[in-house]
Amino acid sequence: MTTFQPTLSSTLASTLASPSKVGNIRSVRLEARTASPRPTRGALKGDRGNEATLALKSAVESAVHEARASPPREAWSRRLEFVLASVGYAVGLGNVWRFPYLCYRSGGGAFLIPYIIMLFLCGIPLLLMEYAIGQYTRLGPVHGLAQICPLLKGVGLATVVISFMLATYYNVLMTWALYYLFHSFGSPFPWQSCNNTWNAVGNCSTGLPSNASDLKSASQQFFDHKLLEMTNGIEEVGGIRWELFGLLVLTWIITYLCIFKGVKSTGKVVYFTATFPYFMLFALLINNVQLPGAKDGILFFLLPDWGKLLEVQVWVNAAAQIFNSIGIAFGSMISMASYNKFSNNILRDTFIVSLSNSATSILAGFVIFSGIGYMAHIHNLPVEDIATDGPGLVFVVYPEAFSTMPVSKLWAPLFFFMLLCLGLDSEFAMVEVAVTCIMDGFGPKVLRVFKRKELLVVAVCAVGFLLGIPHITRGGIYVFQLMDHYTAVVSLMFLAFFEVLAVTVIFGVRRICVMVENMLGRTPHLYFRVCWQFLSPLLVLGILISSIVQYTPARYGKSYTYPQWAEVLGWFLSLISIVWIPLGAAHEIWKNKGPLLQRLKVAVTPTVDLEPQRALSEKEEGQAESIALFDTSQ
Image 1 (cartoon, rainbow, N blue to C red):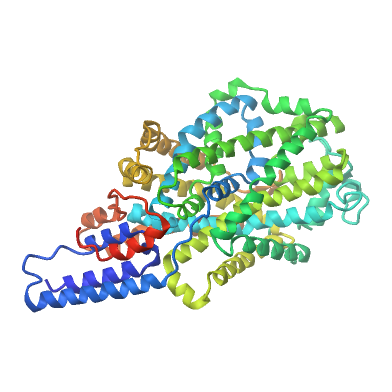
Image 2: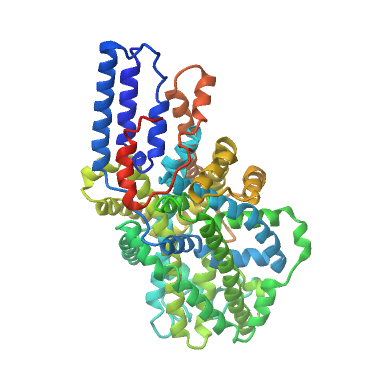
């Protein structure tokens, strides 16, 4: 067969030379077996057979030489580093400013019932699924998901795109935290009075005004007029806030220093950044519960409204909060798990990370609402007039609370430093996804240009910094809100749905179980199999449908609505990540051969090798790879 020789030779060369395949010999051997049809009995006889054999041997030797030239895949020094990095990524700013408000708005203590149910039906099973993909394939989300379901390989690239987009403006939050941190050392606090040049004196209140009032608090005016110097709308971009520009540079430098050595540096940083927020939250809780009015705030947070359990939206909110908080479909969990050893106990790690994340959310609820109860007592206002979510909670309400708290000069700097740590853990995980994607796909080529991986990380951080500049203009808050709405709300649920579809439906629960059994030596419990097969896909589909039905355009505050062209821009930002899913599917079908049905059949056939494998030690693995490349027993 004249087509056999060049097809198999070129396929082997490209497959073995790819750094994304070297880390997983199982995939290399499978793709070599399935790259072309098996030759007929007489195809390799005589001179033609010898020529084909020599050409194949030459292609393999060339590919092995290039594969050996690529750097070996990094690995976490200790399992604890992986757990802390995962916990740090999952426990972010949303745990502090989103969950408590959502809990009180959705039935108080009664909301914990659907929240815990959704944790076990959706959060834990899907986290184990992502860990299994990353650890088994030892690849990032792009190449890992491409092996799981070639037809939906675009989902992996879409997760990388959405993570990097989120990283570009997530660092802006840390820029604000640094700004408040540096200003918290002054006496009195600059957000404490209305006697500053940025205050609109006739519209300023030294305390928190009621909802019925048109006044703005001094802390709100500090945020609007001093920190942001905000314009009247997205139409008025204004100039760059040079103070924020410098702080944005600083936050990206800090991010770079956390990840420039890959998991080696990240693993050391998380010992502090993932643990310090817990010390701070417990310290704040001990301080807050002693303040007058704290009990009323906590009761307001926990007082159950059992009637809310009959509302479908409450259950959807619980599922969405679990989904977004753990970070499913952002690619970060797959990326971090890809640096694990093959036999690492991901089942244990899944429960540790998931339960730690939810426990932190509940702890943050006590901390936040005890402080809000204190503020309601001081200003003689109802708790609902003060309770809020988002940046307004940590950059307006809590700074106002620190103005009247005992030992405020201690609590304010520590609080904003805690926000910085919470943001950092999530930030460098999202940036690492992009670095992992580039190294998996173009490792040797990239290193020929940048010489060192550290310089590649510099380039990625530089691009992220440049894309973040629009957020630090005087109209940047409107850009920030627009991107947050269309990236973290609209796009994410589409990506999540297609990821779950690719893995649990097309790839199949049986294959997931084989992967887990190969790594852990036992099949996943019936609980996981039922969730993967039925419950998790249905829940994700329900969240997606609910998001579409209840879609509302982006807004800023209570009154500002975006112009039509900004809404179009928002949808364009959503499509930047979503578009890779149909493009990837079209490319996969186009490059396959044969009739359409045959092409589709090949496109839904996974390329990951599910043969039983024994986890190798790091010392044995390098030797085993060079031998396996020439294994002719299959």
